[in-house]
Image 1 (cartoon, rainbow, N blue to C red):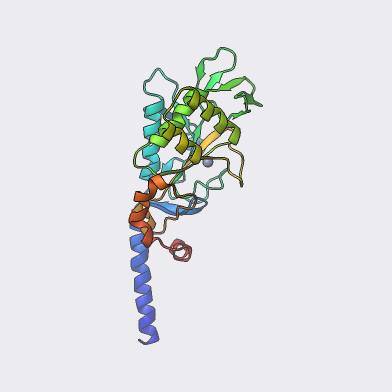
Image 2 (image 1 turned 60 degrees about the vertical axis):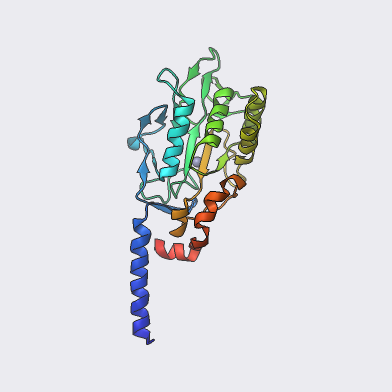
Length: 264
Ligand SMILES: [Zn+2]
């Protein structure tokens, strides 16, 4: 094959590849170096949740169908009625992914910050979480003007609902080690199912390369098999209970070079 023909063929293949890559909805790349096509938007409020910051205040609530479904499921499970203080949801990703202020990841539509449920430190009443509030190993707020308490039972219920969320492939719940300890002790004391506690302990992890996450849960979901075929890269652990899902699309995963070329 002559050089011009080879070049023409390459150009055609690249154009074809780009069109296909950009039309398949979902996540591309890694959580810390990725983007997202045809993202879904999590509404500012819904059954059991409200976002911490709306668009006007710089909130970013675009993600894959999976992460949006995960938020809806856990919000419904942890705030089943209007009388209950809702879950407060931080950022997901920008409309096309990429860099988001204040986050090292959140670039590929597969990360979401869920703020902790809180109680008033004096009255013990359930209160709407006002912001990212840090908690110490006894569950008391740190450096917050009005003392708050970490609502351990309700925060465990949130973790349990993340573990039980269907069809979303949760791969990590980033949270500080001392918060994880409070939650697991609570779950054991309440005799929650052993398999849920076991999975939760595997999913919960204090990140080594960023803040310890003592002020929110950061939940990450896997790529779908379809997303893997267009360059979505899971990274992180592959839990045995998610294997079935993995097997379907893995052989077609694009490598990083292909992905970077597609992003240019
Ligand atoms: Zn986060």
